[in-house]
Every structure is written in C-alpha cells, then in structure tokens.
Length: 447
Image 1 (spheres, rainbow, N blue to C red):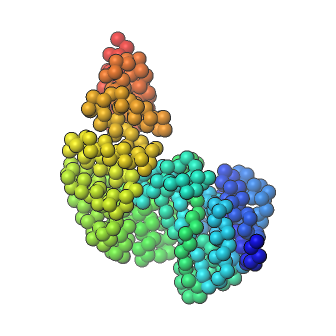
Image 2 (cartoon, rainbow, N blue to C red):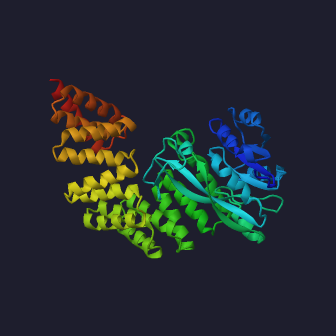
C-alpha cells in the first residue's frame, strides 16, 4: 500500500462552448486533483453546468482577445500547491496519473508534457500512426502528431502565462530562474485537430487576428511572425503566409521550421525554384529534417523530376520510418517512372502503417486499373470510399473500373455520385471538362 503523502493539485482550465469534451477532461484527472478552477469566456451551451456538476469552481470573464488573461485568472484563484493546466478537449490516461503525482514531490521543477494531437491527416508534419498503446484514447483515429508544453508547475511561485495567443508559461519560468523545466514522457491526449472538432470550431477566425495583434505588441518577434505565417497557411492565405514566414526568417534565419513552412507555401504558389532554395536551406540547417526532405521531394514531383523526388522521399523515410506521407509520395514518384510493382509495394507499406490512408488506397486503385487488374482496383477504391464517401475523384475512377468489368448499372451510379459531388466544387476549367466527360459517359451507359 502506498502511504506516501503528495502535495495538492489544482486543475486550471479555460473554456468556451466545450460541452462535448469538458466532462471527459475533468473525469480523466479527478482522482488526483483537489480542486478544479474553470474560467469561462462566454459559453452559451452546457459547459458551465457540466463543469459545476463535476465539482468545478466556475469563474466567468468576458473575452478580451487575450488567452493569457483567463489562464492567469484561473491560476490566481487556485489554492493548491501545484497547478495542472489542461484544455477542455484534452485528457490524461488513468494509468499515467500515479506517475504524474510523483512529479509533484520536487518543487524545484516544472514539467513539460507531450501533447498527442490526434488526426487522420497524414500530410501533417511528423504524423505518427497509432500503435495501440492507448486504445481508450486513440479510438478510431489513425495517428497523431506531437508538440511539447509546460503544463505542471508549483503554485504561488510567480509563474504565469504570457502572450495573447500561443500563450506560454515557459518565458516566465526562465525569467524567474528558480525552476528547471523537465520533460515528462506522460502524454496529454488532445482532440482539437480531429475532423469533428474542426467542423465545429474555426480557430483561424480567432487565432489570425490575435496573431496580428500580438505582432503589434512584439513587432520584432520572429516567433510571432512564424506563428502568423502558419495561421495564414492554415487559412489558405498563401501570399500572406509567405510574407510572414519571410519576415520570420529575416529576424531569425536559423529556425528550420520557418524554412520548411516557407518552402511548402512557395511550392503551393507554384514558385518552384524559390521552394527548392528554401527547402535546401532547411535540410542544410537540420540534415535530419524529414519534413524538409519530403517537401523538397513534392516540389521535384511537381516539376516532373521524378528521380530527384524519389531520392528525397527515401531520405525522409530513412530519417522517419513511419512517415506515411513520404511513403505515399514515393509511390507516386515510382509510378510516374512506370515502376508500378515497386510503387504498389510502397503503397501497401503505407497501408500497413496507416490502414485508413485515402491516398494509398486510391493510388493503388489507379495502379491496378492501369495494369488491367480491375477486380483489385475495385476493392481498393470501394475501400477508400467507405471511409471517404465524398471523395469525388474516387467515384469517377470507380466508374471506369466498373465499365471494364461490364457492370454498367453500378458504373452509372458511380458516375452520378461523381457528378453530384463535382457540381459542388469550384468550377475550375479542369472540373468543368471532367464533368462534361462524365455526363457524356453517363448518357452512353444509359443508352
């Protein structure tokens, strides 16, 4: 029996309209916290009633375009010896709670945790397929990417948050020079990047203006320019993103993520020579930058430089063997060199790592279609559509496969689905052309 006496912990939170998540968060750490302080910034749903029912002390504060303000109010209201900070869409696994309590025995330390941001988007840097280590929290998600933040620190030591957006306590901890920031391997499970949360929250409409305000406070902060560049990129404002990232590099030319993000944006803008230069700089600064090599490979792929692209993707995979996006792009590079058997093996490896991959299944369908293996092609395309039922191009390819299998009625249904979805897309010339082609094919099938 463990008779050790542990210091008390206050769970400090801020929230707005988090009824779907806040109960899960509070319950996950309830066994080890002595009080729960929630500062609400204007919820209109059941967030407050759920939190109060679970024992939280709820304070309200009008939103004032500064994340640090409510966070610091929650810390000021806390009475425990330690502060644990979680967002409403986060949780800690039951099996990690005992280890977390052990951390509180040394007040000279503050603790940095790894956030596991669950997602199915393999394009995200350092996307890692789930391994079954935390099945309760991994759920149906295919993978995650990670970041590190200080979330556990002694109370009553002058530690507080700084920054309107992307707020941190780390700056204040370093200013005080009283504590070490120690890394803890305990993960925080975060769901803010999942499709269901993104569909309900448009964080870009909040984060981008706050990032702009932050720059008015800190115009020479390379980090603020970098954060704004990322937000512009996330919002599809590529020109603004490139300008902000360029300014970040002018202020700090040694931060590799600025170069990898700028190279990606330049590639998306079709500025391929600039993208190559930026990404080559990234891998010179950090030779183990798998993202830099993958983005460089994509740029070569866009330029039809398939051998150079292949080389970059293989380096990225050597650095990060679970890099699903690099495997999918390597498959494309091999397929474009007509090395279809090799490409198929690469896509199958991607599916071993991430069975939900739309790209791998769709591209395998294309490969098998090109090789006349129509039944195999049908299986992979239908598998992709099962998880991604609004992927218009998959319906068009499926129709071609079904026509080859002489399944005219099913092919007509697939073409109809493609036409319905394609009509909802922006009417670019290539979309209009394919729509017209599909409509002609549908008429032929129904004749």
